[in-house]
Image 1 (cartoon, rainbow, N blue to C red):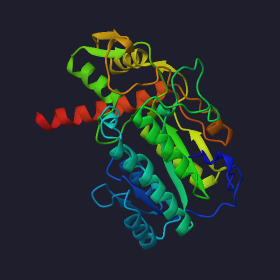
Image 2: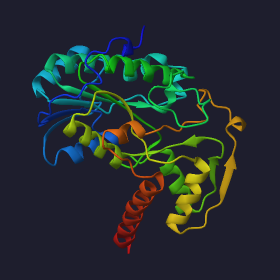
Image 3: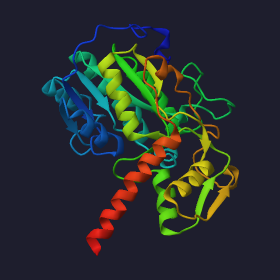
Image 4: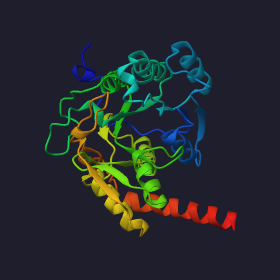
Length: 310
């Protein structure tokens, strides 16, 4: 299979802006999907589909759903995210991250909808020393990363498609991200074991949803964009910043990635550059700012729970 970059298919061109009023969202009950639905429902008609309601790998069902919703845009938030399990169950990863995306891209083409899909930093091998740009050749290390790369290629087969690569998503519900685990350990006074040698640029779901809406409104050139916070850090840096923001002493235990045996290989240097997104007028806040805002929301929830139990 060949990457669709060999056929331009109108990508890279600026199109006349037409109003996006009807939006179909898949994976609507997930961490990013629920945030996207909540944001876009304020001013648009949103048709959310949870995983239980729509199997995106079922091409007939996807086309039927799209033809029923008649969307101006289809946003795919559905994904298979079990990185280690994918090594033993590649078909589930391919169905969720590749074939399902292919079905959605075809449905977008059939209905004339703009297609938005989310990729990952795991399409890279982690051997870089500066943040990856969208032009850097992908080289996934795992089944999961390969399935996500295939999904990108299928997504870009749609005539009007955005692929937003996100990384270490946090925020939204359910709160199961790596950052949520760090925050929980700090708040509960447990040791916080974090990688000291993995460079990251996390993505806050609120900022990703804002950027997604901006792309749909401005109809910037179609193609791949890195949709991550500005700045580069390590998981150790995230934990130290979180401890300061929460104003809570933390028992932070630095860990080297080569000291832990995982089934799937992971890129050590995962930082992505968001300069291309900035070039179309969408500036992503710093990871520190994003973390502070999220910690503020968590602290608010904690206070509410405290009042309820008193």
